[in-house]
Length: 171
Image (tube, rainbow, N blue to C red):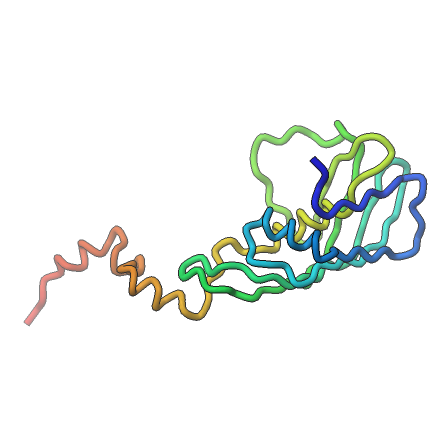
């Protein structure tokens, strides 16, 4: 399967000049379908690549605007991202096996393995966009939709709600 936003980079042709990757309308539509979005209005990344042997770092920014359904009401919810990217491409098999999930801090690199003499920078940008999307984003009408559906807050229906009803009133 070819990724929707593929931009292959050959290690032998890396220069210090910045790269700008912009998704076409068709690529944005395909990514929106992949990520369960209503649409992606814009997706662009500006990156600088630096190679040291067979390890390549990419630093820059991801800027995107998309519309997703509200997690509660389903209404269209415009969203955007303007995030720093720190990607590190390493040869296949050079990352240690990790059984548990790890959380990256803002100064850590997203490490991506590649095979051969090239890697897909566009797919790395697409995956970075996927991480920027909040799957539980709620719009301004979410509370009204919850109430209409009979969904109550955790304070009303949580584990201590029954205990609250047992309180003895003091006169």
